Length: 425
Image 1 (cartoon, rainbow, N blue to C red):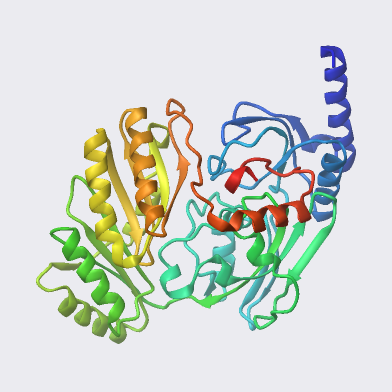
Image 2: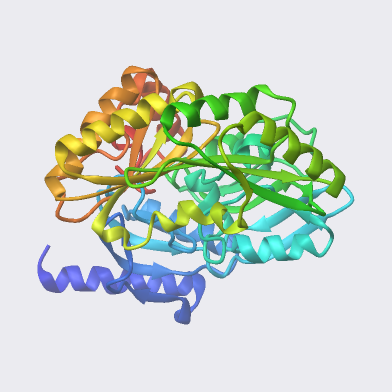
């Protein structure tokens, strides 16, 4: 194709998309319109589900590659896609469709931010019990696609436990719905769980329905200072094995400071006092103090100046936290890297590594080998551009054939985010 014909094809694509969503909602990609480092040619903002489905159908029929985008907070996650012809933004799909507060469910469009959703729910004393990163910018669709959750999953479960319905725009233009606003509805193909964590490779989430929980009337954060990893592990195990009912437990670990354990209790003042007294007994002789609720933003602080660091999501057995981070300490020292981590009591955590690019690559590679050998995982979420390429996902085990079969069924032409997910899906 000659440059002139290529330009003509590009213009015709832009004109066609303008015909679907309106002339003011299609624009050329700019420097900030990248997906895992790959620049986009066009950005399209549909105004409703039908327009979004029509955009995907056009892309699918014309051999274009599309990438969904919400708030853009996690566009570095995953492998670089093969190419990005069109970013499909959900910015205009931002409405809370129905808050059935008596049923404790909410249906919300994908482009609504988590903060706006939580503020609306709080007016009725309810919440989506999910502590996603960057709630002021992260959108419902993006959070579900990335399967992002924090320490509250200890008590309330992860996203797959909270989502009960979803609408997906498939590449062929179909709007597929599954689940519903009734919490006990389990009939039909389980699209909600399938879409959660798929990173937009199967369909574009247009709306989702969640189960809700009451807002706590009182909350208290307590922090325990542990002298070392072994004491931290013993304390975490004691909390898990006790009759305590924390809403969240996390450990903050780094090479420079002793471990800190944060515990969140929610309930009545009397109940909080009783739980604090019991936790004090479990923690002895380690000091316990009422902490600042800001400690629950520790995951976000790991992302400060993220371009200078490698950040990975780790998954491990809760009983192996101390062992794994003793290995992190050793590997980082061997390769000349600095590190810090925030790990939930469930065994999920974020690890930040700083150092020369070759040190980061070697540390991540060695730690992934250790984790995968014991049934865990390491997913690279972000790394400096100077670091040599490293697959974001690592080993996919025996699940890859099934995942590829699902991809072929829902997106046979690899229109959505080709190459970005596990195994290059």
